[in-house]
Image (cartoon, rainbow, N blue to C red):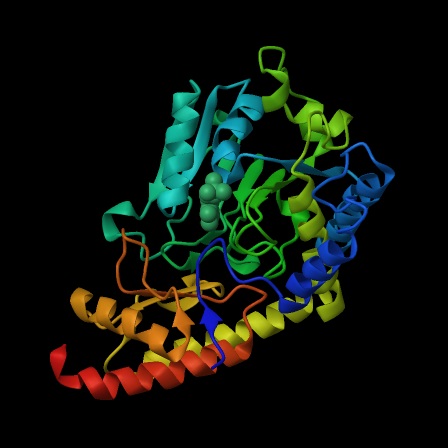
Length: 365
Ligand SMILES: *Cc1c(COP(=O)(O)O)cnc(C)c1O
């Protein structure tokens, strides 16, 4: 039976990439020179880092003034690293509180001694919709505005067409939809994304930073590992980087290029999401938790309205080869993650199953 993994992260990877990793490891077994065993100072690895950077540059259309850095510590470390490096003039940042991860970012900035002002929030409505910048938002009062483009847990998304408009610096957590839909990088001053949603295995975080903004910062009190400049100066090898993860990331980026880049990913992701949302919209049994333009393409959240029943249906899905459909514990219901590597066939299989489950459980709701 074909099985599909709907995990929100770490998440499904392209099967071609998994096969390549296996082949590479098998081939290098005898000489003990596999990617798991070589120096990060080797020419082999140097080439991998440069190729991964070039591929990201091309895929995201990066202007000259932007640089790609590879950092560890996940999206969560960025919640602290960004304010440490960029909140050093006004010591105050603005946060659009659109979900759990935005909220955590605000708390982490506070813990670093920065005032994180929540300028709009949908927390009281369980983050079912996207908060918008208030009309009187004053960008000059803050070092930057922090947003989460895609809210992984709640299934909402600021797409390029509904990005908050600010005249000041904009920082975006793109952990769960980088390369899944097009963004104009020139709208942002810093973008970060943990790899484990859309870019490969957990362990490396991509940071895209505008160099002219970085150059303005006074970071003499920030230690070298927390300072972006260290990564910039040393081609992301100030210390030992996560060698295997960058290698795997590079393979995923090559795969995205082979598929036709971000436009092709976007078209496929729209098709997958549309199919599932259309099904949920017409259903009298399941209902999507997010409506309209705020909907995420990569994380679709829905429910029958009965939490116990949702859990049963998500559990039974495993018998049909459909895994990890339970929603985040803070939301409940179902969450189907449809990242780049998720095939359309996963969505049709899911819809078939949801239909079956409805017939079986029609009267239990
Ligand atoms: C998963 C996720 C994070 C947290 O990433 P870690 O790598 O676990 O620190 C942050 N932001 C968003 C939007 C995410 O999806």
